[in-house]
Image 1 (cartoon, rainbow, N blue to C red):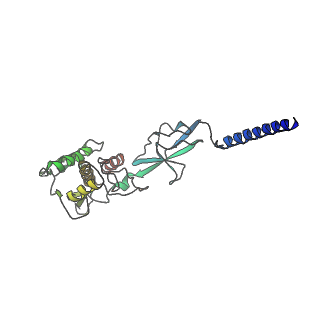
Image 2 (cartoon, rainbow, N blue to C red):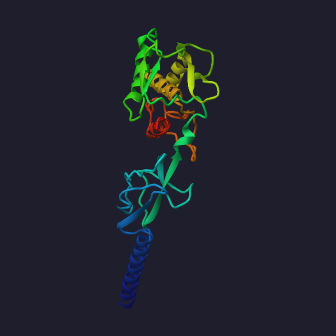
Length: 280
């Protein structure tokens, strides 16, 4: 009888031990740093510009989503970054809201650094820029080139392109197959002693553009439009760029060599701001 009671007692003790171990194991599987969702304030620092509102609230653990766009004279907004120092974490719509409130600071690009150091069009007060008609180019190429020109015309710049051989001076636009590595290329001349564009020769390389479209599985029409719109940016006085230049302009620019030519085939906000800086 005593032996039976002893066995029962040992069984009970064993079961209690199992329950304790089980409970302990389950408790360890829960992250002790987990914080219940709560409201977090993002304070918006326009960094020399202005923004409205100056703060927004989000729920911790959720995506930040779209933040207000700040404005600043002769600057183009690039993005928000967390903290107050350049090089800190960039904030996108997919950034997960942290558990504590924080400051988001605006990063700006200088519109003047987007401009060519010379060969800018004359500021005559007119908004019409005449270019060669390229009417002899076949439809496969002419149509997306016209589309590229139209993207400038429907933008909020103060200039309008028109195709007119008689009024385009000695400028030329050639669509040809070249052994060169360029997609589009432009040579510009200026009035002696000034930075006023007098004429230009533009070349659109059918060989490299076709290869670029095929190699990247891009639409040929989209790439043609992007390249031609880019070259027209040079006619307006914009310079080339590449990569992400924190003090200049970012990859979203039409003038950026690193852009996705299947998607970026029209002037971006920074391009428009820069052109309007010329035609002020």
